[in-house]
Amino acid sequence: MKPPYEITGNILKLITSISEKLGEVKTYYLDKTQPELRKQNKIKTIHSSLKIEGNTLSEEQITALINNKRVIGPKNDILEVLNAIEVYEKINSFSAYSVASFKKAHKLLMSGLVDSSGEFRKESVGIVHGEDIAHVAPPYQNVPYLMNDLFQYIKNNEDPILIKSCVFHYEIEFIHPFTDGNGRMGRLWQTVILMDKYPIFEFLPFESLMSKTQKKYYQSLAHSDKKANSTPFIEYLLNVIDNTLTDLLKFSGRKLTTMERLEYLISIGINEFSRKDYMEIFKNISTSTASRDLKKGVEFEILKSTGTKNKTKYTLCNKKYSKFGR
View (cartoon, rainbow, N blue to C red):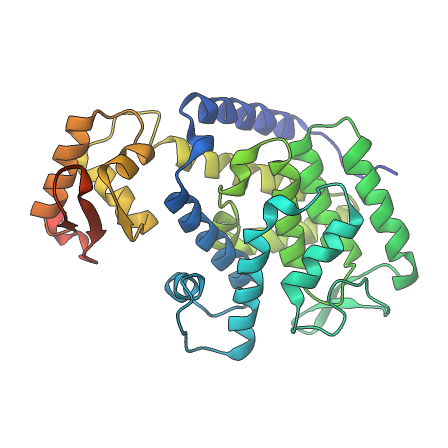
């Protein structure tokens, strides 16, 4: 069965906008981002998705855990991050249209956090906001059938995959197939579904914007529950994807100043890079422009350089923007 939703004019407008931006991504070869930027975006994805669930670890602490360093923090928060790191490192191994693969991902994601990781719930559940019951999930006996129907829908329905991925995300929140971890599984599997057609979604951290607009995230879920269809949630998520692609492209589709490029470099927090890495991020600049940028960054004490000529490596000095006149 097809889950209930309507394809509105706004949804069609967003689909068109996203499709155009995905075309630009290919034009600028941004779907072939270099490994260090992939790593940074993975950190942002993990941090944002778990932050929505109340995890307290910072991006810096998550980076330390990825680099096998010790971190001080709540035991469960650290375990959540370690599990998420493992899952996102294996994200290419999951099959978007397989229930078994979906359950395997949950087992990895929730290992040590719930006794029934990787298994659908065997009890009734309700979602409580404050003192109110916001949502009563379907009876647990129906979960296997509902999940099979949902996977058949995303596999066989002819609607755009952008829409189907949003519907899947909402339906996971509605069905609540697991005792815990449903929100993070909805976000993870939307990425897996989108990656099957658009590989760029492996390192497009649209969860970051979900985290920043968390109130709207929950409002759109509640609005969809009230309407008994996922249309409001689809519109919200397509807006998130569209805005995330806009942020990605604004650093490739127009000519930036040296200051803008260096500020962007600081914002993504790459630990160490070469001139070649810098030019992988800013693909429309020349070798001489890259050299001038990096020299200016060193002069401003924003960057520190080691080595000589083509062996030179750059690291951030953790300076504020005061050197740029802020």
